[in-house]
Amino acid sequence: MIPTTSMKQKARQFLHILFPILITQIALSAITFFDTNMSGKFGTNDLAGVAIGTSLWIPIQTGLSGILMGITPLVSHLMGSKKEGDVAYQVTQGIWLSLLVSLLVLVSGTFALSPVLQFMNLEPQVHDIAFRFLCAISAGIIPLFGYTVVRSCIDALGQTRVSMFITLIALPVNVGLNYLLIFGKFGFPRLGGVGAGVASAITYWVIFGISLLFVYRSEPFRSLRLFRSFHFMSLRSFKELLKIGLPIGFSIFFETAVFSAVTLLMSRFDTITIAAHQAAINFASTLYMIPLSICMSLTILVGFENGAGRLKDARQYGIMGIGTAAVLSLVTALVLLFAGSHVAGLYSDEPEVISLIRHFLIYAIFFQISDAIATPTQGVLRGYKDVNPAFIICFLAYWVIGLPTGYLLATYTSLAAYGYWVGLIAGLAIGAILLLSRLVKVQRRYAHNKPSAA
Image (spheres, rainbow, N blue to C red):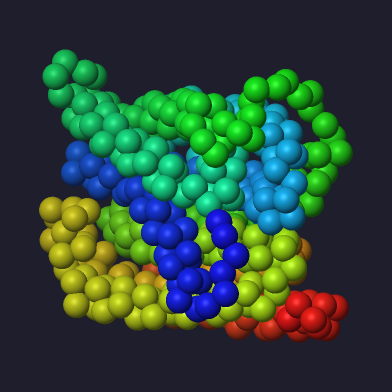
């Protein structure tokens, strides 16, 4: 990354950082998409089982990955303030923390998985598929969290094309393994939805290995001497990383977990409704990769400019990123409005399921527009290292307002399952407004403290 002086230069650098991140996020989302899609083609019970398993796994994965992504603003600040020599040590501490987090998840899952699934009172076949899917995917937890740290460092250095290349390698690996293991092709076992979990676990090991090879042998990572010296765990470094990472992780967890909570609450509806809801959520999550990628880009760019004391440039990047996300959300809204039937057909061949998916996608139009404002705004706030208020706002918007509203509408009105989506829309809209208000306050505080830079 380089300092910029004009909006044209900023736009060029913004797109240079954003485009590879967007491709990377879409490819990562496509792994979940193909898990769900190919399981649905195998059978409705497999689609529902993978849907339940994914609903339990995704909030844990994204929330804990968010904690480890705290390495991104730390490294971008170090690079902006010309402290490149400290990067290798910080990344090593991130790897240690990822290992501890992985072990914590594995131990917790050993004791908690069966009781949670029993509590949900699922149909026996759906319960069995969800349990075995989660057991299979757990084999890839350690490399997945390790890759999160390495990738966060790669992106913080502005080398987002490297992350894109690694993920584009992973996608065909995952799809190919899904084909072999879900449908039992070429002599492989016919595992159904469980095969998607096995394929994902193997894929996580592949991308972690490739990422380590890149940072060890390629520039500019090689000159930073990443992983060339051994460093013991440091509680002080953990504290610094967690101070930024925990609020980020909680913010992401609150947002993703509310969607999973809705899916779990929908277990009281029939299997077709669960499958249709999850298919619609899965596609909406794929569209969410656009504002999420802009969010990650803004964290890198605003963190770099803020670390160098160029507050005017940091503010201009924020405006550019949030505006871009808002415009693109209108484009994706048109896709959902006019191509809903075609999208639904990607997930199922059953007319009743397709019809339900299409109805759910209409509601997805409204909350993805709010996401386009709220998510990039969080990225800007992370660039300023202002992370605590954001996770409080997310908690209030999603869990105090959104989910209870959805439950009341689904339980006591004729909206039924659609009531949950109305509640989500309300929560996301309020969250977007509160986050924008917080950003304005933070930028004014920085301008007051450093008037010459602003």
